[in-house]
Image (cartoon, rainbow, N blue to C red; front, side, top):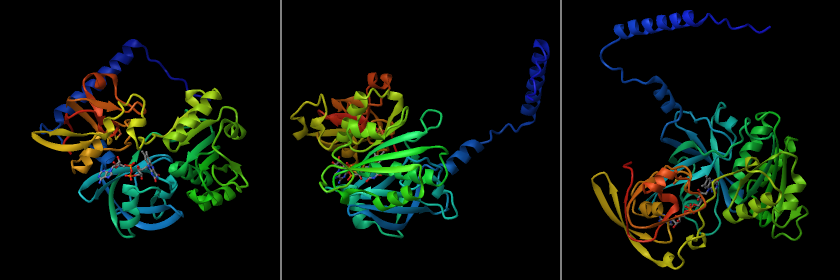
Length: 398
Ligand SMILES: Cc1cc2nc3c(=O)[nH]c(=O)nc-3n(C[C@H](O)[C@H](O)[C@H](O)COP(=O)(O)OP(=O)(O)OC[C@H]3O[C@@H](n4cnc5c(N)ncnc54)[C@H](O)[C@@H]3O)c2cc1C
Ligand code: FES
């Protein structure tokens, strides 16, 4: 039987409140006049989620002919709590450049809380790429990398999302769903059923193929459907992830979650729009900037060939650096070894927020996460803005 709440009446309640106030005043009077610099809540938060951590590589293994899993442990054994779909941000020095790159955690959250806590990332290396090349060629077991976690909002949320999840993945976009599948197979995310539609070109391109097969075998709530676009003898689904394929594996009111490259996002988004899927049932991860900025709608074609100067103001310091029009402002800063904090690298999180003092920039229309007031006051996100002229910008001191 529920216990009823007794309302004492207006005067008695107010009288009670005045007693509390009196007690507070007495406690204040007894307190030290020297302010206590300690903020235990802030200190605990900093301890549980440090701004920077050092992670040791404890294992490296193949996840396909072109991808590798890197397993990390932290020096003190503590790995901040994260959810399937969130990412770790690594800071790296490659040659003269100071860089940071996000990688979705491909292991499951429960694995970061066991007797030997760890987390894993799965990195794909296809065409000549900068950071994957560095990780594949230089990083070995025993090395330490600087990073922080967790970041990002791409995770399943029970108050908002359906327990029937249809994941749409392409390439290394399988990583959040591999984490989620492991979590479900371990009895977490109770009642969830996950169907992964995973698009690859050829069978050899499938990342974490054996791992996914093992999870599927062990857990009836996880189903993996490979859709191959260039493997004529493939016995399963062939072609792209079309509306027909999505409908075939959907359940009424399921939540769709997408993670993959930009062209695939456009294709899948159109299919879901055609199916009449409301926005609340479609979750997608941040999508990388396109390799060629001139393909973005509204970009003044021909400008991408040019090079500009950027005057970078940090406090009382001013540096003048070169910037290719074809690269975001954050990349120009990184090349010049000027520290800029980046996380999502697609205009959404705001960590790279900078102030445009002079000049003209092109802002990506894909992930312009700026607030209206920021736009009006000349703030921009350096990771997803390209110079259209010489610039003068002010960035935070790091
Ligand atoms: C949220 C999120 C999660 C991700 N998760 C994964 C994942 O799980 N697995 C995975 O494989 N990938 C993942 N990625 C992609 C990953 O972060 C990298 O973008 C990818 O590995 C390619 O890295 P890259 O530096 O070679 O290329 P990009 O990140 O595309 O950056 C290339 C940029 O670096 C510039 N550049 C070239 N040379 C230099 C230089 N010397 N100095 C400075 N800049 C230079 C180039 O001009 C270009 O603009 C994720 C991305 C995001 C946004
Ligand atoms: S790094 Fe997220 S907005 Fe630039």
